[in-house]
Amino acid sequence: MNRIGVCDVTQAYDLLSHMDQVIIEGIYTHIASADSDLESVDRQLEAFGRIKESFKHDTFKYIHVANTATTMQFDLADINAHRVGLGLYGINPDDDFIKTGLNLRPAFSLYTRLTQVSRLKKGDQVSYGGTFVADHDMYIGTMSVGYADGWCRANQGRSVLIKGYECEIIGRICMDQMMVKLPSAEFQIGDVVTLIGKGMTASRVANELGTIAYEVLALIGDRIPRVYLQNGEKVDCNLGRFG
Image (cartoon, rainbow, N blue to C red; front, side, top):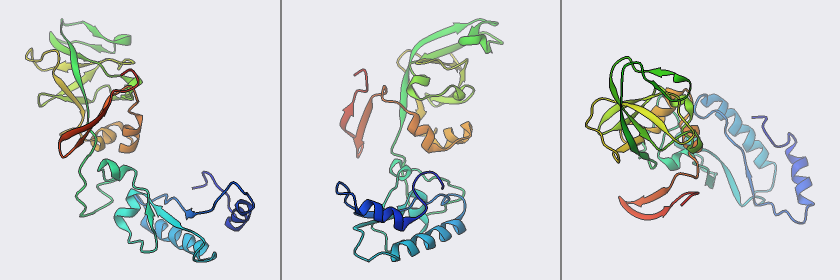
């Protein structure tokens, strides 16, 4: 990947071996293209194998190469550790490229609630810069989430789910608030809003933003409370930075 590290593995090993504060336990590589180019993965694994075999077999306690995309597609018999980052969220890195029989179940959902319901008149503007102008009388809802929580401004124009309806995000997303167009007056303060969840997967959000699901998930900040479920039952919670 030419990201970090050194080119001469033997030199690196010799350097670390002379550092009393360092205990060498493992060797690893990071597969760069398992979600797009399997031939490059084969070449990288062959190169890694040659490096590994150049040392004594008992040199390394841990040998790990596999991210989620690699784990899902390759049988790595001599590998004893994996790094399944996105897989822990129950998400396939690329459903079109990676065909698998694994029954991955999404393990992350993101919700907020309506904090205000308002009626706009034709010609009213919404949020900074007036980028949305009502072309008819309508209802809008405000909710307490914004780009300081990781829900970036690029989400403007996308949708969230409220009571089964896809509601368009209108106006610029603020630091900790955003507005959506409501299809009728039946919505109330306190109604649950699904940003990521059933019907609105992280992969769908990512595709509509032109990015990857991992970026969408990694952006979610520590202001947002976490509730941890096991078999549908709450087992723990973290109230977030301001809890």
